[in-house]
Length: 388
Ligand SMILES: [Zn+2]
Image (cartoon, rainbow, N blue to C red; front, side, top):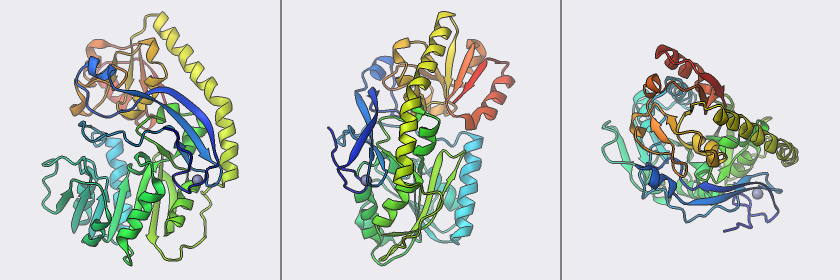
């Protein structure tokens, strides 16, 4: 599959700039054996940038990939750092948009943790829409779940506020998806809130571990703002949060979207300069890591990765030939005993390190470094630490 048109603006002027060969197509599905993990299909990722709107996407993405027939675990709520963040942005949204006692709908609610939190903080009614919702995961009686994809009919549920966290980056047809939401709302004007990873940080620090197959769409403030306006929304705010890893947008349906842009929205020309810089530095970044990991292997070090999920797949994909890392630590107890798709390393709980005593721990997200080092020293584990 090779996509010719930009999914956000339909332009055919796309420039390829980064290729990852043989990336596992799944990163957070639950895989119960090493053999099954190694049998996960691998496909190439080819990032291209649209010269018209600056949107970055995987041009080789297979839109037939089905993530929902396999179970998956993507809950992050086991981390104190993460829960603090979620609670803070929830309270900010509730007070900014006066959401107490209102009806809030979440598109792509996963297991329902966020809509449950919002409902607990705001009261009112919570609605979750996601084909991957699992019945019985939430027991809050003020919540209703629709185990299906969002469609035009859901607009009739009359939400006062719509949120969509960490879903849009999994959707290839970006413009069509936003138009679907816009059409579903008709003349209604609920505020729509999206949160997604932002690509500019990935490009600026060559964070190759944040590029993986399950994410086909990579947004910057500029490309996201342009897309929302084109799809019929007035953009109320765009900002970064979570150490600049996340991009947050708030918008409201409009028949005549305002042209006004926010200072954070970079131009397409800015983005082309950023891409040139990435192309110069990424190979150096990759070869430095390869050299470092090879040295660890030669000196017989025990190396573990801390932080499962997609980042560890993105990171390990680049070095899977080294067969250096047997274990990946994750604090989500539901991951215990699973294997990393495509890679075959085994998920373990933090306590595992007490006996294993690794020489080196590579932390997949620096946001959690304090939390992780505290946990390790409390267990008498004091390895050398690298933090991405
Ligand atoms: Zn475009």
